[in-house]
Image 1 (tube, one colour):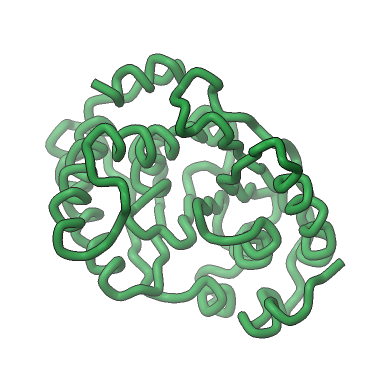
Image 2 (cartoon, one colour):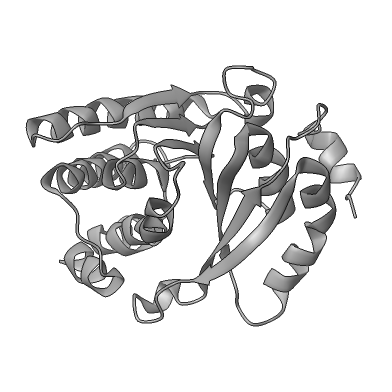
Length: 251
């Protein structure tokens, strides 16, 4: 099985509850994807590698963080990376954020099914929240602003945009982890350079860029994890409205 092979490559072990959660999540994704477009990856192996293992590539890194029990996934879509990471960490709290109503409905079904699967397997399940809101709106809510220990974002936007959306939701000392590609054409370095201004203003610092396991899968060979450490409180006014973010690049 692709997941088993990938876990061995990543040197990861999952308990029965986490495996049950991942299996039921993948089955629901394939079933719902026939009716609503959640992902372009439709075959079981594609889902296993392109979504599950890509998500779990951050697991070892997250487990080292003292704040990993509190996880928020921006633009969760089909539930990646938030659901498999929350199940495998394990996280105590997990928020799945997606402003698209049909995706939020899917995430609500997934959260309930994953909870049942983990409890049935004898493992405690995270407390899931599905938030059908934009990250900008959450950042204006005291229940979420600067309250989360880890924020993850996969296939959401440019690094500068992910930083501006994610850091206001992070507590000081927390980490933002962004899935990016490093195709050796200089694009990643350009994104890192373009994010310096918003990092400085929002209180963050790029801590490290972690490459994917080189032998995991050719399709994931250029994937990296950009880890941002939040060192200072984010000032009010951030994130800016979408139109302003597009109009004015902070340098």
